[in-house]
Amino acid sequence: MTGERDAARGAAGGDGASGAGDPGDEEGRVRRLDRATVDRIAAGEVVTRPARVVGELVDNALDAGASRIEIAVDGDGTDRIRVADDGRGMARADAARAVERHATSKLAPDGDPVGVDSLGFRGEALAAIAEAARLELVTSPGDGVGTRVAVDGTVPAPGGAEGPDATPSVEVEPAGRARGTTVVVEDLFATRPARRESLGGASAEFARISSLVADYALANPPVAFSLDHDGAATLSTPGTDRTDALLGVYDREAASRSTTVDASADAEGTSVGVSGALAYPSVTRATRDHVRVSVNGRPVRNDRIAAAVREGYGRLLPDGREPVAAVDVSLPPERVDPNVHPAKREVGLRDADAVADAVASVVADALTGADLRRAADVATDLDSALEPVGEGDGSRAGAFADAEPIGVFRDLYVLVESGDELLVIDGHAAHERVNYERLARAFDGDPVPTATLDPPATVSLSTDEAAAARAHADDLAALGFETEPFGGGTRRLRSVPAPFGRTADADAFRDALAALSAADSGTARDARDDLLADLACHPSLKRGDFAALGDGDLRNLLDRLGECDRPYACPHGRPTVLSVDAATFAAGFGRDQ
Image (cartoon, rainbow, N blue to C red):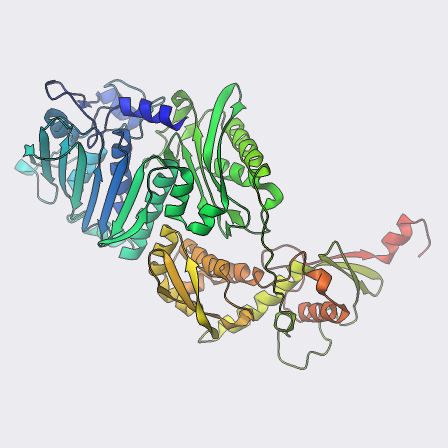
């Protein structure tokens, strides 16, 4: 399926930076769209941040049939971005025309973007980039005739022309290059200070770029991707298969504990191809950010398909955890409308619900046949886990002072007699509440209590997680996580928040990282509530732990829950306690009270 799609896409030629043309053909393949088509596909502002530049240039390289794409970024991307590929390249006439607005080889002048099988089609990207930066394009179709095109959008156009039809001066000259195209973009937004000031810091902007390149690498595993930041390699995939792509983006654990899928299912009479890599349920994250979805090789944000992937995992996932998966959906081009979002990161799908059902079915079938055994590593550490929340000698107090535990049902639910009621307590939810309030009290102080790890723990991060860790290093430290780089995407964890009462937990660190990345303001305080709720889950007792608890342990858990400010709900909002009164039993058995 991937090979057929790549062949079709290759026939479409390139959009500006990637289309090959016949050197002897004066007309060339890059043509200006007519006004009606321009109006139909008008995308608004194409270049809003450095990641958009990278995405547009990678689209061009893939459309040109590249087997290798090299990306290098300096600083936050406004200083310099370089994207080089080994695709078909362009003839001189096409290269010169490619930097004109609404000039493309991928859509007929009067064409409709619905049904286009290329990633690019609007003919806006290179022109928009050239108007906001210095752009140099060097390309060759591999016949010994290379071309250099230079456009400087940081100086006014000749004659002071302004507006969307203004074109900066263009230099075109011969140049030497092997088959393919290299685009260098420098001084992005140099003449747009407001746009530059709206960007995040260098680490935050590069994190966006890193995540985007990872999406492309996982969506197009036969293509080798490399990403450098300030001269250091941060991502590399070999262009072989999906497992190797998963290894390049994540780590050996994710790659070795995963299965691949390549199957099809029917959706309203249409065959839907589903291919990808699915990490086992023992490899999870706190958020759905690591469910990466693409349609016909185009990375997209599609909540319906992402939810379908999650649905395919079903009950295999632990509570509150999300999978690591990269899934590409292959559909006939006429069933996909890529012209619904300026960044082309959203697409319209015909029979979207049927497509999602097909994805869920294929994922479920793939996981059913996989070896999903997990190695048990349970350390309940009951003494520290059930310490009193507040000060005092631990004597009975609070909401459950007069209640008595009488047993455990299904190795999770604690049965408690309390006056005329039978209380059923979700043991995990109750322990989460205890840990949450203990953490909240500790985190309210300044500084946060921490425990030094000796030896330090080593944590492997994906490329975008590593970029986020650099961006939020200060906030992580404020929360009690002290880390340092340890080669590639690996970080060494030197300290953790002390309230855990346990050794380091890599998932807890990843959850903290995800919460900080998702915070609107990017500060520890703004992210704290969600973060503490996630962190409280890790040291909490789970199904399978309760068989080891004696009466004294159950009593301690009940006392600690009774001391909480809000004992009747876990930090995620689920109830901790259900009650059945004696009258209900009497009525059910036909007895008088």
